[in-house]
Length: 260
Image (tube, rainbow, N blue to C red; front, side):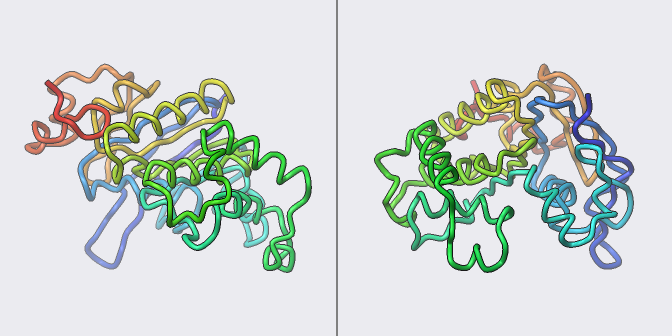
């Protein structure tokens, strides 16, 4: 069953920049899909159009049977509960602790007042601690997030998304700021989340070899268009089709080391 259907999606900025051009694809429930392509290809714009962080110019996104463009503000807020978002630069509140940042993932379930006063129930706190333990952050639970390493911060970001109880995770360059060791840890966690919890993952990546190692399927984007959609066994010709003349410089293994 398809959890996500994207049909003829386009996004134009101003008169000149067409970031996405008639993008169409579907994603099945529990699938792990890597979106690859050069910088400026439209990968981040695509993710943000899916959860309507930005509105597309044309086309349609149907998630979990709901047409996203038709949703009013409160309806969109409720639908976004099912979509976890993980960012390259973490988007944490640095002065707050790990547990406080993770519980922020529950804000979509709260009234404005309950969110302001940080009122969380016993079950929510229990779930937060369980997720923190699952992600290997128990010793950091009461540390401020500005005291954490980059890999630890990204695991907090994953925990914050998981506590939403999402159907799908959108991951925008989740390892771009990390060293090789931390990158592998993050990708292993994301893969396990998809495999063991059945959560659909749509992951933007620069590193071709990471996509080949972890994804069920690869979508290649160049200049706002899908130029490849298929299994994770790209030929050199297909890599070149996605990346063009920069292809030779953009094939990396986990963490950004050049593939041999």
